[in-house]
Image (cartoon, rainbow, N blue to C red; front, side, top):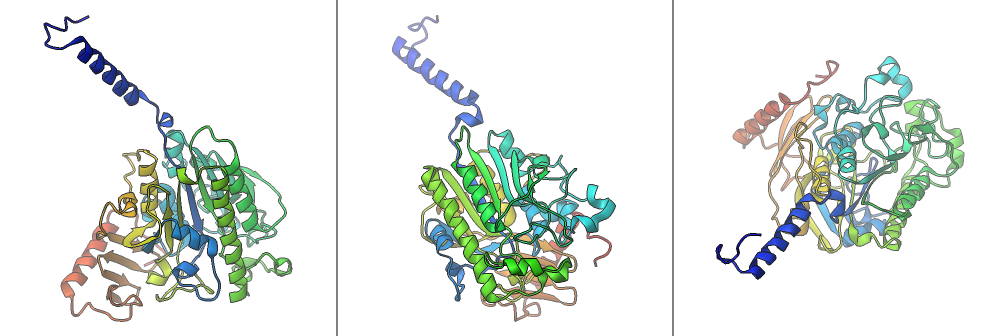
Length: 455
């Protein structure tokens, strides 16, 4: 024992210092699972357009549960998907990086299993690539994916191989809502790695499974990715079993028919599903301990309401990439607000990792920003530089400016006064135009090249 007087310190001071040191050391040695961290519920709709929620402007039907979610959190009115089509965006969220950094992220979208042939064991998200699920799992989280995967097929690729403890859903881009068969008649409903049969409407099946995940006893924090297939085609509501029985195969068969009324019915099921999931959080007394994020994988298609934007799915105009986004975390994120902060798919990955105190893999740097400070009102709206590229189009957004090359012409749009992208400002602002074009070329040199079949 040190001689306290000769060291100029009293016994009481020594004991206090020793206790503080012990506490600090214990905290430093504490496992991540010993520290209270939020659960995470990430809800991803499929082909949901910017204006398809009534709280984002849909005039002909209502989405009361999603509107309530927005009232309890913050709406992002300048949120984007990483791509105007599903596979690249899903790849961007799962990896937290631009889709063009991975081979599967170049697929627009990944074809049905039958069409891939021998490439089925080549095209997919590599199990070696770190994902939001594998990082959270390593950090003590229970990880679940309920819904659509669309990043590769079994036996080599799948959610279980990429960090999820459990999976219930479909592997491909679309299935019939009643038979769960893809466009070529292949059964496509899985429990982990095993094909299963169920009876019911797919949106409701996914909701029921998600409620089950939330309602079980939890001994560690959970991360649940709920990737609904609604309102993606084939356009079938809960009452459309006869439509399902007559559905023809192939892309043409799956995309035929539909109506605004059918779309509204699909949205009603989606909205009710989100309501049931949020109710389950409340019943489990987990709603205040759960970060909830809702968004879409790309802009809407035939029956979507993308106003005030032009363009739709597959297009780099605003209607193809601007999506609704809502973030809710009671007691952390103030309720009833909206923000013009620009956001993109990879930001949700970075935000979730930051909120859960999970470190990214240093060998795979994230391309997104942690938006918690902006969501909490601790950081003012700031400019972003974002890039998009698909088979034949390029785009950059920097502040209010957007550069677009649609494969035929190049444009410079001022989104602060022209969200419909009608007026080309490149002649009046040649320096900005050349700057953004150059920025895109620099970015493109840092990612994978376009497949040879495209320009």
